[in-house]
Amino acid sequence: MSEIEIKLPSDPKFLKIIRGGISHISEICGFSSEESNAVTSAVDEAASNIIKHTYNGAKNKLIIVNFRILEDRLEIVLRDFGEKVDPETIKSRDLNEIRPGGLGVHLIKSTMDVVNYDNSFEVGNQLTMAKYLPGKKEK
Image (cartoon, rainbow, N blue to C red):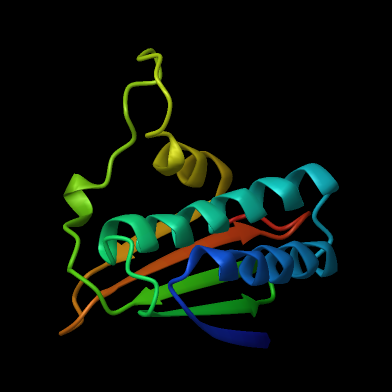
């Protein structure tokens, strides 16, 4: 197993670091360019949602991102220390509703093979996402 951890402030200007990291790691894992771009977009959306919704736009809060290359999957864990979020309220808007925004959750769930929200911590939330490696399937 290979693991990389990035700690950064919740300022949107640092999202490029997350995008660059996941893009490169996706390539290392053997994902196609299209899959790599989709995974990068999903992780970027998740981090953006932490800034916008959990931290209410604050730029000085901590976000921890762990990238783990496992035997059968790439796992990305995002941890925040903001307001607790009820996983039941995390929903995408109706896809037939034509308006900007509100599709981040749909993007994340349609791209990633595993999406797990956890708010059982004393403070904050954790989102675990995984994408099975090419040629590997859920057992």
